[in-house]
Length: 239
Image (cartoon, rainbow, N blue to C red; front, top):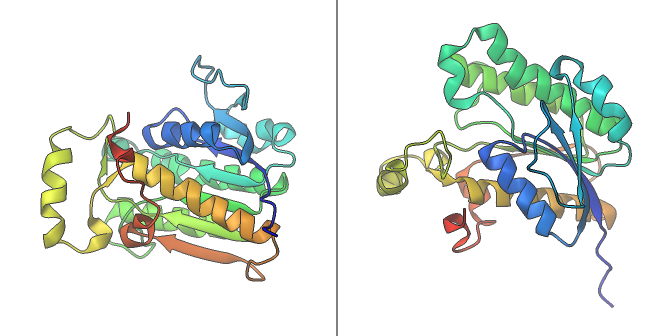
């Protein structure tokens, strides 16, 4: 007899962004996901589905504001960061957005019961990197890793296509250049990235729920090749 699949609840940081918005759509459609707690900085009219519970927070008090709403969550997903705007911002502000807020989100999610976490970082992340942004993102990975989830997936996209901050022409040009660069720097559509984050996290949750997961904390870094197996043909063309 096949094992019954466990349902789960998720908590999401970054739902108003390009990748986070797609993650939210996938979770709403997913029959295994029974509830999504969406953490936002300001009230929007975008979250009308009955699965969605929106929590508006002061980001500098994220843990305190989110704690009452994070009880009994199973999976935490963070698609949140500065991205393209980092060059125009003070380093202190970039560090707050890229490191402090995601780490606080991870801490409150784990305190609420989450055993699985997925965090979007970036290709080339390395705390020892000479390039400032790559160094900060590397430090972000170390910060969320310190929270010690049963399973942590760190997703490292390069150029994200289908993103409102990415010129549309790159959607045609970048795939033509893939042959000339290492696979970890291949462009990825936002829908493919979102699918990888949701599918890998769900896979990890089900393994834990069914008692087949490795013991102890597991950290998995997913670059393009590791994410590619989760892509769904034709999905990247959807809005």
